[in-house]
Length: 217
Ligand code: ADP
Image (cartoon, rainbow, N blue to C red; front, side, top):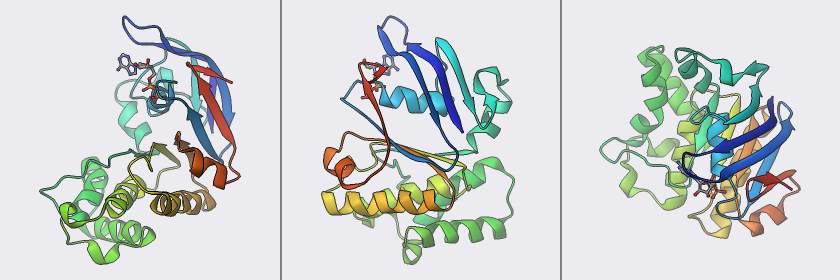
């Protein structure tokens, strides 16, 4: 599903953030991306989401060389991918329903009825259906992160990327969030989670890609 072939990334004026990275993630797999702060985890996720482009090497996602996309193809490609951040960056002047609906509204493809159906299905999966009219400031940290996850999956992505999704949460909430990712993986979504939460990693028998100073170890 995701294949890196000798990928390097150098930001302007910097040393290599990633050097000669190669790996393959099968469709429907779940993987932790581990490594110290500054190891290149976020860069790797941004390359998959086509938010950055490699300085060298090739990235194939779902059989497509994503480096060859024209600017017009990129938004369509991104619809295949849901992204969860450490801080979900919810819009505080919109309620929960509106925050989760955003990715669908942006495409302009869905009827109001379809949006309602999909948003409620996503909220149901993260068990926050009863909060659809609440404003994000009224939610706990764990609930906010679950809203971020609902927003990431509302467009039914094939791939779910997460960048330190449990970084702001205590151990019990972190495990709850991880269990949500496991559930999405069980219905076929390919999941890649960047984390340096060693307690979380040790709890689950999930394959890892480890980065050390931009290289896979
Ligand atoms: P991690 O997510 O593992 O903490 P990052 O991918 O954020 O690592 O960073 C890897 C390296 O790339 C670091 O040295 C960081 O300073 C550098 N870096 C990340 N983003 C940028 C950027 N936009 N411009 C310049 N350097 C960057």
